[in-house]
Amino acid sequence: MSEVVEFTLRVKPGHYDQVVELYSDFAHDYMAINPTLKTVLIVGDAGAGTVRGIGVYDTAADAAAVNSDAIFANFNDAVAPLITGSPERVLLDLLHAWSR
Image 1: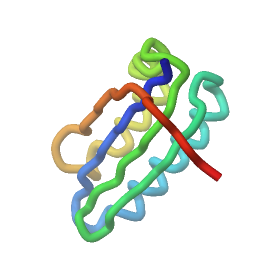
Image 2: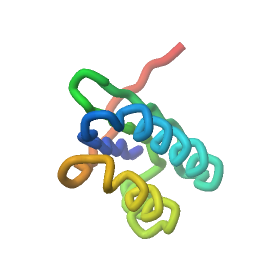
Image 3: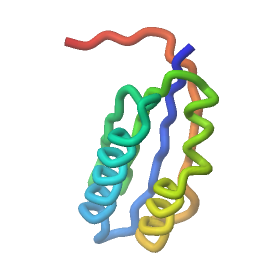
Image 4: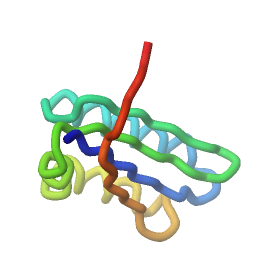
């Protein structure tokens, strides 16, 4: 079963655009090197200071493997001074998906 990862960042005031750019660059680059990552959405709310990535992986094991990738560690290091608290990571089973 496909696995969905939600990875949410709470952005410090004044750093929203910078975090969006870092997150978008990371997602683009990671999708290019990881064939198990099928879909990525980066969404946000500037007023609330929230940036969230939603990725769909082939399996739960594929989603979990991201934690040991150097590119993910580098991304986390880059955003750490720009966010409040720790990122929130949630794993979910993909039950249904529709798109046009």
